[in-house]
Length: 217
Image (cartoon, rainbow, N blue to C red):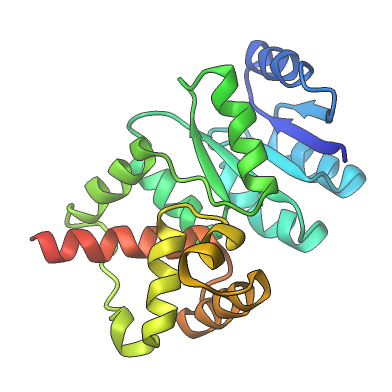
Protein backbone atom coordinates (compact mmCIF):
# COMPACT_ATOMS: atom_id res chain seq x y z
CA UNK A 1 0.00 0.00 0.00
CA UNK A 2 1.42 3.37 -0.99
CA UNK A 3 1.62 6.29 1.44
CA UNK A 4 0.88 9.73 0.02
CA UNK A 5 2.78 12.60 1.60
CA UNK A 6 2.71 16.40 1.46
CA UNK A 7 5.76 18.30 2.74
CA UNK A 8 5.50 21.84 4.12
CA UNK A 9 8.65 23.85 4.88
CA UNK A 10 9.59 27.41 4.06
CA UNK A 11 13.16 26.48 3.03
CA UNK A 12 13.47 25.12 -0.49
CA UNK A 13 16.61 23.16 0.35
CA UNK A 14 14.79 21.37 3.16
CA UNK A 15 11.88 20.51 0.88
CA UNK A 16 14.27 19.07 -1.70
CA UNK A 17 16.14 17.12 0.96
CA UNK A 18 13.01 15.63 2.50
CA UNK A 19 11.62 14.73 -0.91
CA UNK A 20 14.88 13.00 -1.85
CA UNK A 21 14.98 11.02 1.38
CA UNK A 22 11.40 9.85 1.08
CA UNK A 23 11.88 8.89 -2.57
CA UNK A 24 14.10 6.04 -1.37
CA UNK A 25 10.98 4.24 -0.23
CA UNK A 26 9.03 2.93 -3.24
CA UNK A 27 5.79 2.92 -1.24
CA UNK A 28 6.13 6.62 -0.33
CA UNK A 29 4.72 9.12 -2.82
CA UNK A 30 5.44 12.81 -2.23
CA UNK A 31 2.48 14.53 -3.84
CA UNK A 32 3.61 18.09 -3.14
CA UNK A 33 6.36 20.03 -1.37
CA UNK A 34 5.26 23.59 -0.57
CA UNK A 35 6.55 26.55 1.41
CA UNK A 36 3.55 28.41 2.84
CA UNK A 37 0.48 27.70 4.97
CA UNK A 38 -1.82 28.73 2.13
CA UNK A 39 -0.12 26.32 -0.27
CA UNK A 40 -0.25 23.60 2.36
CA UNK A 41 -4.02 23.88 2.81
CA UNK A 42 -4.50 23.84 -0.97
CA UNK A 43 -2.29 20.74 -1.31
CA UNK A 44 -4.17 18.91 1.44
CA UNK A 45 -7.47 19.78 -0.21
CA UNK A 46 -6.20 18.51 -3.56
CA UNK A 47 -4.39 15.33 -2.52
CA UNK A 48 -5.91 14.32 0.85
CA UNK A 49 -2.52 12.87 1.84
CA UNK A 50 -1.94 10.07 4.31
CA UNK A 51 0.79 12.13 6.00
CA UNK A 52 1.46 15.86 6.22
CA UNK A 53 5.05 16.72 7.21
CA UNK A 54 4.60 20.19 8.66
CA UNK A 55 7.14 22.80 9.71
CA UNK A 56 6.00 25.03 12.58
CA UNK A 57 7.58 28.19 11.15
CA UNK A 58 5.95 29.37 7.93
CA UNK A 59 6.05 32.85 6.39
CA UNK A 60 2.32 33.53 6.27
CA UNK A 61 0.91 31.64 9.26
CA UNK A 62 2.27 29.37 12.01
CA UNK A 63 2.11 25.69 11.11
CA UNK A 64 -0.25 25.02 14.02
CA UNK A 65 -2.76 27.49 12.55
CA UNK A 66 -3.55 25.22 9.62
CA UNK A 67 -4.25 22.09 11.69
CA UNK A 68 -8.02 22.81 11.93
CA UNK A 69 -8.15 23.27 8.15
CA UNK A 70 -6.33 19.98 7.62
CA UNK A 71 -8.69 18.16 9.99
CA UNK A 72 -11.71 19.62 8.21
CA UNK A 73 -10.48 18.87 4.68
CA UNK A 74 -8.85 15.51 5.31
CA UNK A 75 -9.65 14.00 8.72
CA UNK A 76 -7.60 10.86 8.09
CA UNK A 77 -4.36 12.75 7.38
CA UNK A 78 -1.66 12.18 10.00
CA UNK A 79 0.22 15.35 10.87
CA UNK A 80 3.93 15.00 11.60
CA UNK A 81 5.38 18.26 12.91
CA UNK A 82 8.99 19.27 12.33
CA UNK A 83 10.36 21.11 15.34
CA UNK A 84 13.63 22.67 16.45
CA UNK A 85 15.15 23.07 19.88
CA UNK A 86 13.83 26.12 21.70
CA UNK A 87 10.32 25.93 20.26
CA UNK A 88 8.67 24.83 23.51
CA UNK A 89 5.63 27.09 23.20
CA UNK A 90 5.04 26.03 19.60
CA UNK A 91 5.25 22.36 20.60
CA UNK A 92 2.62 22.83 23.30
CA UNK A 93 0.38 24.68 20.85
CA UNK A 94 0.81 21.87 18.31
CA UNK A 95 -0.20 19.26 20.88
CA UNK A 96 -3.24 21.31 21.85
CA UNK A 97 -4.16 21.58 18.17
CA UNK A 98 -4.14 17.79 17.93
CA UNK A 99 -1.18 16.83 15.76
CA UNK A 100 -0.15 13.18 15.63
CA UNK A 101 3.59 13.37 16.15
CA UNK A 102 6.78 15.34 16.24
CA UNK A 103 10.21 14.98 14.71
CA UNK A 104 13.22 17.07 15.64
CA UNK A 105 14.78 18.61 12.54
CA UNK A 106 18.17 17.25 13.45
CA UNK A 107 16.89 13.67 13.12
CA UNK A 108 18.47 11.56 10.39
CA UNK A 109 16.69 10.20 7.32
CA UNK A 110 16.09 6.77 8.87
CA UNK A 111 14.27 8.42 11.79
CA UNK A 112 12.02 10.34 9.41
CA UNK A 113 11.04 7.15 7.59
CA UNK A 114 10.45 5.35 10.87
CA UNK A 115 8.31 8.23 12.11
CA UNK A 116 6.04 7.99 9.08
CA UNK A 117 5.81 4.21 9.43
CA UNK A 118 4.88 4.63 13.10
CA UNK A 119 2.15 7.15 12.32
CA UNK A 120 0.71 4.90 9.64
CA UNK A 121 0.65 2.07 12.19
CA UNK A 122 -1.27 4.23 14.63
CA UNK A 123 1.61 4.92 17.01
CA UNK A 124 1.92 8.54 18.24
CA UNK A 125 5.35 10.06 17.74
CA UNK A 126 6.59 11.98 20.77
CA UNK A 127 10.37 11.92 20.87
CA UNK A 128 12.39 12.50 24.03
CA UNK A 129 13.43 15.98 22.92
CA UNK A 130 9.80 16.98 22.45
CA UNK A 131 8.79 15.48 25.79
CA UNK A 132 11.56 17.50 27.41
CA UNK A 133 10.27 20.65 25.73
CA UNK A 134 6.81 20.01 27.14
CA UNK A 135 8.17 19.48 30.62
CA UNK A 136 10.19 22.71 30.39
CA UNK A 137 7.11 24.61 29.34
CA UNK A 138 5.04 23.13 32.14
CA UNK A 139 7.66 24.26 34.64
CA UNK A 140 7.40 27.91 33.61
CA UNK A 141 4.84 30.38 35.04
CA UNK A 142 3.23 30.74 31.63
CA UNK A 143 3.01 27.00 31.09
CA UNK A 144 -0.24 25.10 31.09
CA UNK A 145 -1.13 23.26 34.27
CA UNK A 146 -4.20 21.09 33.64
CA UNK A 147 -6.04 19.93 36.73
CA UNK A 148 -7.17 16.68 35.20
CA UNK A 149 -6.86 13.84 37.72
CA UNK A 150 -6.70 10.79 35.52
CA UNK A 151 -7.53 8.22 38.18
CA UNK A 152 -10.70 10.12 39.12
CA UNK A 153 -12.02 10.10 35.56
CA UNK A 154 -10.89 6.76 34.17
CA UNK A 155 -11.36 3.14 35.12
CA UNK A 156 -8.44 0.97 36.21
CA UNK A 157 -8.37 -0.71 32.79
CA UNK A 158 -8.48 2.65 31.02
CA UNK A 159 -5.56 3.81 33.15
CA UNK A 160 -3.60 0.75 32.02
CA UNK A 161 -4.37 1.61 28.41
CA UNK A 162 -3.37 5.25 28.96
CA UNK A 163 0.01 4.25 30.34
CA UNK A 164 0.59 1.90 27.41
CA UNK A 165 -0.35 4.64 24.94
CA UNK A 166 2.07 7.02 26.67
CA UNK A 167 4.88 4.55 25.93
CA UNK A 168 4.08 4.71 22.22
CA UNK A 169 2.64 1.20 21.90
CA UNK A 170 0.31 0.39 19.02
CA UNK A 171 -3.20 -0.98 19.63
CA UNK A 172 -1.99 -4.49 18.85
CA UNK A 173 0.96 -4.18 21.24
CA UNK A 174 -1.33 -2.84 23.97
CA UNK A 175 -3.69 -5.75 23.41
CA UNK A 176 -0.86 -8.26 23.66
CA UNK A 177 0.35 -6.66 26.87
CA UNK A 178 -3.06 -6.45 28.54
CA UNK A 179 -4.66 -9.58 27.12
CA UNK A 180 -7.23 -7.67 25.08
CA UNK A 181 -8.31 -7.77 21.46
CA UNK A 182 -7.16 -4.96 19.19
CA UNK A 183 -10.80 -3.89 18.75
CA UNK A 184 -11.30 -3.69 22.51
CA UNK A 185 -8.19 -1.53 22.86
CA UNK A 186 -9.49 0.77 20.14
CA UNK A 187 -12.82 1.08 21.96
CA UNK A 188 -11.05 1.87 25.24
CA UNK A 189 -9.01 4.61 23.56
CA UNK A 190 -12.14 6.13 22.04
CA UNK A 191 -13.78 6.19 25.48
CA UNK A 192 -10.65 7.73 27.04
CA UNK A 193 -10.46 10.48 24.42
CA UNK A 194 -14.13 11.26 24.95
CA UNK A 195 -13.82 11.42 28.75
CA UNK A 196 -10.79 13.70 28.58
CA UNK A 197 -12.17 15.90 25.81
CA UNK A 198 -9.28 15.02 23.53
CA UNK A 199 -9.19 14.36 19.80
CA UNK A 200 -5.81 12.69 19.25
CA UNK A 201 -3.69 10.02 20.94
CA UNK A 202 -0.74 12.39 21.16
CA UNK A 203 -2.69 14.50 23.66
CA UNK A 204 -2.87 11.50 26.01
CA UNK A 205 0.90 11.17 25.86
CA UNK A 206 1.39 14.82 26.74
CA UNK A 207 -1.06 14.65 29.66
CA UNK A 208 0.76 11.66 31.14
CA UNK A 209 4.06 13.55 30.89
CA UNK A 210 2.48 16.53 32.64
CA UNK A 211 1.02 14.42 35.42
CA UNK A 212 4.32 12.64 35.94
CA UNK A 213 6.15 15.95 36.22
CA UNK A 214 3.63 17.26 38.73
CA UNK A 215 4.16 14.32 41.07
CA UNK A 216 7.93 14.84 40.88
CA UNK A 217 7.63 18.40 42.15
